[in-house]
Structure formats: C-alpha cells, structure tokens
Length: 240
Image (tube, rainbow, N blue to C red; front, side, top):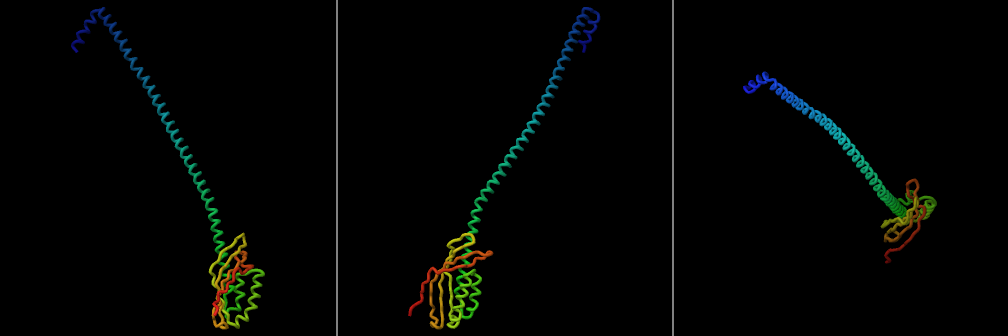
C-alpha cells in the first residue's frame, strides 16, 4: 500500500513520466484487452463442448435405439425359430403317431374278430338236453346269411335225438387267431377240445380235438360268421 501511494504523485508532476505512465497504462490496457479476449476463446470452446456433448447424447440415444431394435430383431428371430421347431417337431410326432395309431387299430380289430370267433364256436357246439331247443336262437347272434339258415336246419335235425339220448356237448376253445383281415372281411381259425357225454355210452366222455376256419364279415360294427369249414377232426376217445 505505501509503495503505491509514493508512485502516484511522481507520475502527476512529470509529463514524460505521465506519458510514459500513459504508455504503460495503454500497454497495460492493451494487455488487459488481450487478457479480456483470451477468456472469450474458452467460451467458444465451451459452446463447442456443449455441441459435442449434445452430439454425443444424440449418438448414445441412437445407439440405444439401435440396440433395442437389434434385440427386438433377435427376439423375433428366436421366436420364429422356436415356432418353426415346434411345428417341425409336431409334424414329426404326427408322422410317427399316425402309423402307431393305425397299427393299434388293426390289432384291436383282430382281437375283436378272434374273440367273436371263439365265442361263436363255443356257442355253436355247447349244449345240454335242457337248452337244446334254444341252441339255434343263441347261435343266430353270431351267424349271418345262408350259414345261419343252414345251422338252424342242422340243429333241427339232431335236436330230438340228442334230447332223447340226453347228450351233453361241451366245447372249450384252446386258441384263436386271425388268418387274414381285409376291410370288412376276416378269416379266423379256432382250436377246440370237445367233450361229449351221454347215459347211452355210460357217460364215458368222447374227446375230440377240432379246429375250424371261420369266414366272417362286419355288419353294422358286428362281426358275423357267414361260412365255416372244419380243418382238423381228431378223435381222442379212450378205447375200452
């Protein structure tokens, strides 16, 4: 503070000194102007920085948007692939299941044919003196066409004699199989053991092994026998 107060009066009394002082002041002012101009450049840089930051912000937003778009596309592709795989696997499963279901249907039909054939033979050749009169009617549930009429005539012919001799006939099915199955037609083979007893023969059982071939057709969902032939007839009755 003291140093500054001493310099000021000297400057006022000496024009040269004042001129010099003025020059110095002018230089000082020029220097100050330079100093004032210098801070202006950082302001311009600051604006540039703001613009750069704005550009960076826009770039970041665009990048984020592109990232979301890419993720959306990847998700869509993944979903499309998953759907394609599902459809493909479903198609493969369907292709594999169809023959399986078809085979199961054929097996089920053959079982029905075999059971029907076995029941038919059991009914046709099992009777007693007490139910002989209703034999043809019971058998009619398994027969069709001319064969039904033929069997009824056969029963009518033997009914009186068998009732008089008190014949009891019992047929046991030992096996049955389907020989062929074509549409609504089937051929079945049935193997049996038949035992016949009568007081006339002192109730000594007559044993026979018989096998039959049955020609069958499906009518309204029911399998009926329309023809029958004997394949094997073997008499196993003990000889006394």
